[in-house]
Amino acid sequence: MKKRSRRKFKKVIKILMVIMLGSFLLYWGYQYYHKYDVVLDDDSFNEADASTLLGKLQLLSKKDKRIKDIVNNYEDYPEELLEMLVNNLEMLDFVIDYPSKKGKVYSDNVENIKEGEIPLLLQWDQRWGYGNYGNSSVAVSGCGPTSLAMVIVGLTKNVKITPYVVAKYAFENGYYLNGTGTLWTLMSEGAKHFGIKVRELGLSKQLIVNALSSGHPIICSMRKGDFTNNGHFIVLTGLKDGKIKVNDPNSRLRSNKLWDYETLKGQIKNLWEFYL
Image (cartoon, rainbow, N blue to C red; front, side, top):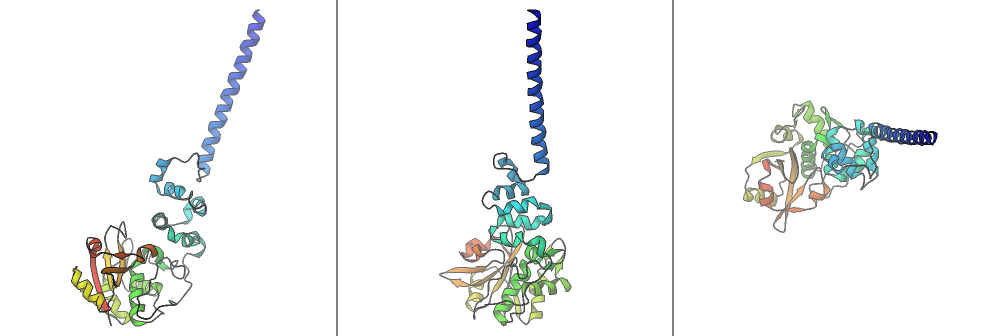
């Protein structure tokens, strides 16, 4: 009887040891997986992780699997560029190609502009967005040069003035400050280099309407709001149905909307009118 009890006891001990060993292996495997693979599968992803930039990208990867490649190569991308992507999936194709194309410029002119219009140019256009702008790139920090390029091309029809051309001029002539971006003096002074005239405009609905009715585009420096979380430049290009047409160098979607003056006025920090 005693021998049988001892055998049962040993059997129970063996079972407990197997259970403990299995639990240890499962725990070790889980820790290893999460240490070395930044892409979490859908079941293990914690929604609270979406408070981080990496977490937001992981969440977005559920909508577009191409973003998983970006997450897997997270260190190859500037954090500012990934923050822009999180807020604007329009630029996904641009971001995917960034590691292989950074620093390169693929075009020396703006194509297909329409007579009498201020063209919509995007700072993250693959033709110039990878180009360097100070310690950044046109895609990340080039909203000012891109806005000014729209105005110059629209008024002068000189298709050689791309956002990269303006960015290069701005950097070489002291209109760019590392860590800050484009200075307002690019609009008030630097624009004259490209053969256009400029005057600072007061924040007034009537002044804006008068300028746009005369065919004079307006560049606005924007504070946090519909267009930016930090700082941004946009172009007011005209009027339609009592509202304002906007070219946002960072978004086709926002550029396709018409905007009320009341919506814009609280977000505008400064503005400049341009003409020949």
